[in-house]
Amino acid sequence: MFKNRNKIIIAVFIAWACLITFRLFNYTVYSRDHYLEEGNRHALRSGIIPAARGKILDRNGQVLAWTQRYNDLVVETYPGICLANTAVIKELQGKIKGLSPDKEKEKYIKRNLLPSEIYALKDYLSRYQGIRIVPRLERRYVDYPEVRKILGTVDSYEERDYGVVRIFGVSGTERKYDQHLKGMDGEYEVMQDRNRNWIPGTWKLKTEMRPGDDIRLESSLEEIISRDRKTDEGRKL
Amino acid sequence: MDFRGTVTFPLFVHAVLLLLGLWGCLAIYNATVYSNAPFHFALRQFIWLIIGFACMFCASKIPFSQYMKHAPWLAAAFFIPLVLVLFLGVRINGMRGWYAFGSVFIQPSEMAKPFYILVLCWISSLSAGSLKKFMLLMMMALVWLLPVAAQPDFGTVIIYVFGMLAVYLISGGSYLMLVFPFLAAIPASIWVILEKPYVLMRLKGFIDPMADPTGSGWHIMQFHYTLARGGFFGVNWGNCLWANSYLPLSYSDSAFASLTEAIGFIGVLPVIFGFSLFAYVGYRLAERADSDFRRLFICSMTAMITFQAFVHISVNVGLMPPTGITLPMFSYGGSSLVSTMLGAGIILSAAKKEPENGHGRDQASGLMN
Image (cartoon, rainbow over all chains, first blue to last red; front, side, top):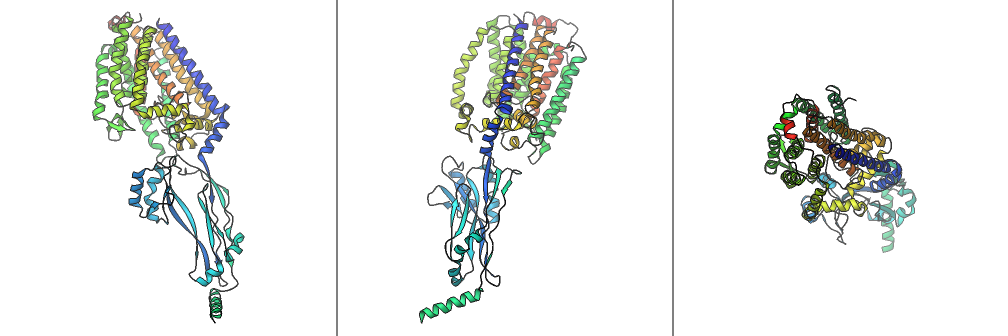
């Protein structure tokens, strides 16, 4: 009796071992490519390194327009993305002053984070999905209305897939030399964990970023201002 | 190979367990290499391996007749901590199943395994009738299962239930009786699913992992991807990016998948073969043991360790839903390692020929009815 029973148990274990081996072979060899591709699709994320828009300088090299980088906190709250519940948002609001809902109330935003605020978010970023620090580039100008008239304006749009804001010229020098100023975005690939945090050591550059060219105007800042004032006085007379 | 040899077999077992243990340390290092302290877990496991070896050596030196004689007392000594842990233990991962002594954690449900089998073998030796034996074994198993289920540690509950069924079947119990535990398992399963929603989530995730790939299906999907990344030859030790980044508990619950990523299909085949060989060696050894009690203990203990290993591997290759069961000798955990080696030590003791003193043989007569 003992011998028979023990034989049955051994037979069951051997059959089980065979089943395990076949299954293992399927994942590691037979269907490997399929699962590798699927895994990479879930884990790898492409991202854009926005090209820094070139500066606009006057004849003497004084900077008239430049691009400044800011960091915004974005807390997504729509279902399926965010695990940060109301209690977490309240906790965050206690730490980050000015975190408030956006127009569509799909997310909470706090613009221009201070370095100390970024540090305070360290633990939240690795713990919850949907809490992100999004870099934002903003165009800044010297504070002269006369210069602004010549330089023109820029607008921006958000490329949601990559979470970046692109700047483009809509009038004046900004528009005229947009192709030179805008440069070429770079592209990277990185593995992200379940909470969309980057996994150290997995960042790879796919395309190098080329910053925009600087544009030097033929006039100096003083000339632009005085020319504009003269024109204004002429109009008044 | 002469399994009856007084020198050959113990040496063989010691060598195999030492190799497995060292390989386990390497596997743990591999699974934690990207953490802040890559040697922390591997070093602790190595210390536990030394302690385990000492326990195995001591356990193998005690005559098996002593284990037989004192089986109820030994079982009680390991059962009491199992109950007390519910009141004095610490909660880790939602389970109150550990005693904490500073930075050392002892899991009594792991340590008690060899003595649980021992007491079941002892109960089996007391009763001759199939029904009576079954009832007694069931009652004893229930007594042991309750505190484990209360922790709650359902993975260990599965191992304990298998242990009871193994003792009953190997000792010649009727197959018909097995219908009852299966019937009893139906309402118990419903209760568990209703009381513990995470169990249902795990089942759902197992059936259709892609339905919730970042939630309940996450663990299953990561097993698939980790195994695929390992391929035929593996990505080599220390390069297990996927296991380190995505697999939950890659050094314990997901140890086999983590190992596969490192050494591939060809590298983990010896692990599957090794546990199958372990079961076969147990069988051959039991065949030649002196008494039915010894045979029953050797077979049941071997079967329980092999079962635990195969459940762990099955979970990791997607044949079963996640259970939280560790891979003996490979997964991180001192209690599991020491318990396995203690069990192996008692198996070695049972395999030894002893001068007849009558006690064990008399008690075990008629065990295999």
